[in-house]
Structures are given as C-alpha cells and as structure tokens.
Length: 624
Image (cartoon, rainbow, N blue to C red):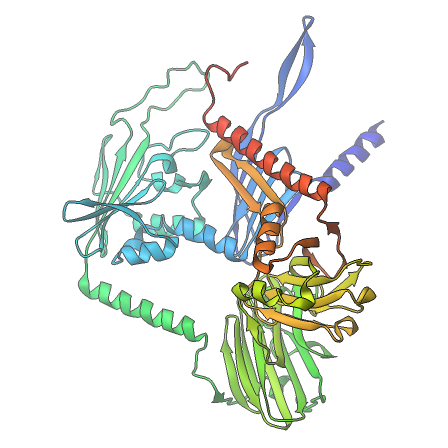
C-alpha cells in the first residue's frame, strides 16, 4: 500500500504545473491558492467542510529557477523581461513583446519621479490616448487612470499628482496607513512592479518630516519634489469589531497620496531636449548615418580563413558571453534564425549572436528590397564594406546592386529569450493598399473566385518556412496569406490549378511566397496585415470580476471584414499561432462553422454578464 501511495505522490508531482523564470532577473510572484472544501456527512447531515485554508503570499523567483504549483488558484510572476499568468493548473500564459510593454507602461504611471518636470504631452504619450480634463484654478485637473489624477498649471506642466482609491485596496484588506504604504500599492489588483516600487522606496527612504495618526509628510524628499503627503481613510484608529482569537492591531487605512512638484524651467527644457533627441534617434533606427564604411567586421575574428560561399551564406553562431568562440557553423540559403530559450546548440537565446557572409551574383543592375525583421536585438548589414543598416528595429529599404558579385555580411546580437531575426534581399515588388483590393479582384478573371484565408502569428520553422499542403479544391480561389512575423510561405503544388492568385501580408517586413505550386500564379503583396491569427475570442474574469479581459477576435467579424475588403466570399480558412506546415483549408465556411462563431459570441456575452455579477451582485438574488 505504501508503494501505491508513493507512486500517486510521484505522479501528482510530475503533473504539477511548473512556472520557470527563464530570464536573468528576479521575478516577483504573487501566489493565491484557494481554500478547498469537500462534502462530509456530519450527524446525518451532508455538509461542506473546509479541508485546506486559502494561502496568499509573495515570492521572489531567482533567475533560471522554478516555482511548482501546489494548489488550485492564481499565480502571477513578472519582471521587466517576462510575465507569466496561471489561473489554474491547465492554463499557463506567457506575456511578452507589445503586451508586456503595455503592462510596464501601466505600472510606470505609479512612478512618482517620472512626472517631475513633465507635461500633459508626456502622460498622453505614455497612455496612448488623450486625457480627460476639466478647467481647475488657473490650469486643468485630469483623470489619468483609476486611482491616478494630475493637476496641470496654465502652461500644461504637471504641478501635482494624486494617488487614491482602489490602488490601496485588494480583495483581502485595505492598505494600513503607514510610511511604507506605497509598498502595498496595487495596479489592476496586482502588487506594484518591483522596479517601480524600489524607485518610490528610495525617494521616501528618509524619516518623514511630520508624522501623526492623521498625516505623514515628507518635505522636499528630492530636488524635483516640494512635498509628499499621505492621508488616512478615517483620520482615527479603527477597532476590529469582529470576534477573533487573534489580537488585532489598532490601525487606520491608507486613503490618498498627494505629491507637489517643483517646476524647474531649466530642467524641463533639458528634459524636452533629451526626449526630442531620443525620438530622433529612434526614428533613424541607427547609431550612425548610413551608409558608412565599416572599420572592421566580425569576419576578421570569426572567419579568419576568409571562407565565403557563392550564392549562399556561411553562418557563424556564437555565445555573446564568449564572442570570439564559434559554437557552430553551417551553409544556408537565407539569413534567418528562429528559436526559443536554448533550443539551438544550447546557446541561451538572450546570449545568442551570429555572423553571416556570402558572395551573391546579380545578372544585371537592379534595385532590391532589403527587409530587416527583428525584436529586442540589434544588427548591422554590410555590403561591399559599407554599412547600409545599423539599428534595432524593423525596416524595409531599397538598395541598388550593380551587375556582378557583391559581398554581403550581417552581424546580429540578440537581447531576448526568443530569437526571431531575418534579412530578406528580394526583387522589388509593388505593395498594394487594402483599399485597392476590392477593385483589383473585381477583374473578370476573378469573377467566380472565393477566398481561402490562412492566418498565423509566425512560422515554427528555424528558417521561417511554412509549407502549405492544399487539399482538393473544387472551385477557383484567391489564396490570402496573413501573418504577424515575416514568413516564407512555400506552396509545393496547386491542385487542379484552382489557386488563381496569391495575396500575402505581414506586420513585420520580409514575407514572401515560393515553391513549385506558385508557377504561373500572380502574386500581390499588401501593406500591413489583415487581422490577428485568432478566429475565436477567449476571455477571463479576473479578481472576482474586477476585470473582464479578452483576447482574439470573433471569427464572424474577421470573415465579414475580409469579404468587405476583397469584395469576395470566403470559401475556407486556417488559423494557427505557429506551425511549420498546414493542410489547407482546415475549415470550410459552412453552416456548422457559422454556428460555432455565433456560439462563441453568445458565450462571451454570457461570461461578461456573469463576471459583472461577481462585482455587482444582486442582494435579493445572491443567496438563492
């Protein structure tokens, strides 16, 4: 029997969800395990009995360590590089990229010093929308967010900041009124990000200038701030009226914080100048004006024998912690690399670097479109010794190649836990606007054609390829290929020659279509992308109804938008986050699929209503 119990324990442990900090920084984790109950018969009456208590605590997860789930409930871990959310043992969501940036910006609103010598424009830039303001005194009073207001003087400069309301409360208790109250400040129900909290702690590290049960104040805690005032909820100590074996401490609760800034014209002008310079630097995406002559390239150290293949590239992969040591080399047809964590030669993605070199022959003078697709990284492109790109953002530009051989070198350094990089050197093609598509496909040759829509976030393939395997298609179709990242769509065949045109689009530059199946098919490149990859909306009710958050899109809305854009009916579609191959179409737009779309919309409306009811229950109906 004891061996059976041990086996069960091992199986449960192996199946327990694990959250891993794959970054090089500490992660703050909030763990909230629910109380667990079971039904028992007591004195002949079946009753609900609590078997485990609810557990709520904060844990610091060190770099490259793991946190194993030990109960049902919610776990949220985050730092500046990664955010992980687990609402139950079967769901683990990783948040990065643009979503993580939005999360960080939200927390930055509670950085007290960030408002010093700033104006209305700064706050609107951080938020991404205009503030709601009213005239007040000689300036304006503006609502920034839940629990954050600012007072602007007549010049639009930030004079005062106010923090109040639910940011000092959570689902367990109010924040005690003390000089450390900002340590417990909560953003959307979650504890303030540690990197922001540390800034606020440093600002208010010294002893308050005045402290009583009604007021805590710091006079001039920094050269930018005149004073910081904490005020309590009631202004007197509260006695817990509920009987409890545990002795309760007399205390009051936090209500509001008022910060008054010193308006320094000189510091403000300097800050504006630095911001303008930063914007200019970002706009040009390079540290130097290009093109410029490269002093040296990585080839000197990594390719001392000067091996340069013809019409291919020699790739040299390195760990940037040991940059002169080549981990692996290979010959490749294209400059592209994609992987996560350390799944490529055991090089941790945040430490990955690469150098590609090749001699490419051009049969005639021609303009080529060079596309750079990258994320949280930087790269240099050198053509015949001249740097033509030097930066860290997506870019597409043309370059004039003369007839003959040209040496192309690319240097790359990654700074993220995923590697996602490509450089395309393709013939220049016309890019159509979405508004042009309906007119384009109104031509007689497309009269009976319908849309076959394929949408993904990215390719799973290391080289960015995504192979399309068409099923038997019994009608003429326009193949529409949509992605977030740059994808090399490969069509090996065109069954019954029913694909009459191919449209491809992506948010990141560099997508293309290739393969034997594309022979004789006209291709149209479109600016931007048509939609996200999801054809279903998924929602969660957070913090007992405090927030109803959805991701994805209603499939019916995506289809309607496509048909409106192209002026054509949709025949079938595929939707996938990431894959290396797809058999198309996976779904036909028939009555069954339309019913599934309708059911998804009905489920979301119902879930939203139920979520709202958790926040605002009916007192008459709550216990029925």
